[in-house]
Amino acid sequence: MKTAIVFPLGLFVFLVSCATTPIPGTDIPDTPENRAVLEVFFKYVEALKTQDADKIISLISEHYLDHNGTDDASDDVDYHAVTQFVRSRTYHDIKAVNLVFIVKDMLLADDGQTAKILYYYEVRLKTDRRVPPAEASSLNPSGEKWLKESDVNQMVLRKEVSGWKIVSGL
Image (tube, rainbow, N blue to C red; front, side, top):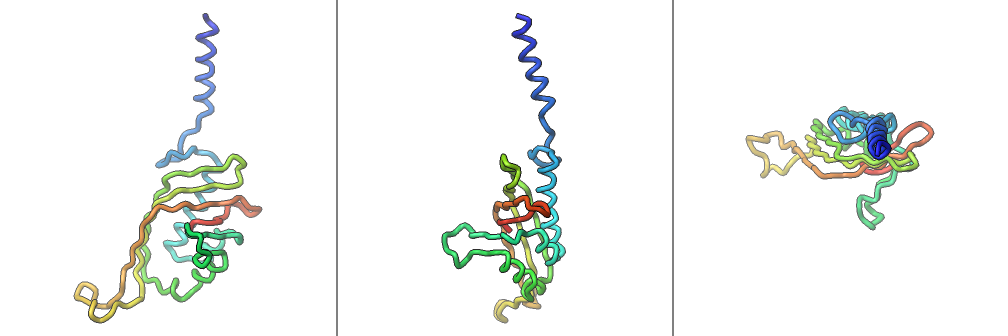
């Protein structure tokens, strides 16, 4: 009878002692690998806020490929396309960036080499693009345009020799 009580109690204590606490503000276990993956994600968000093209490029794998959720290869984005865009005049002509990113979940593969981050984002960009004169108003006399996009996305990262790199999901 004593063994029947002591064994479950010992198992409970063992399981509780092995449990990790979550990273503050998330349900993601606080482990060094999880923190390393999320650090790359948050460096990416900061680089977007500051429009730091070199920083963005440094976080992306040379094997980056995003199919944009379609079977149509014409809308695929690879490493070259990302680097070309963040170095483009269009990207640098963005006047203001307002971002909200919320990490919903993160999964580290059993082999520890791949991680997936599910996140919500809301991006607002003030562009140099002008609206037609008929659309100009006293609220927007300059004709500049604020663009807004929000969605849920999945970013995939892979552990490479130089550390965690983004392989899809920008």
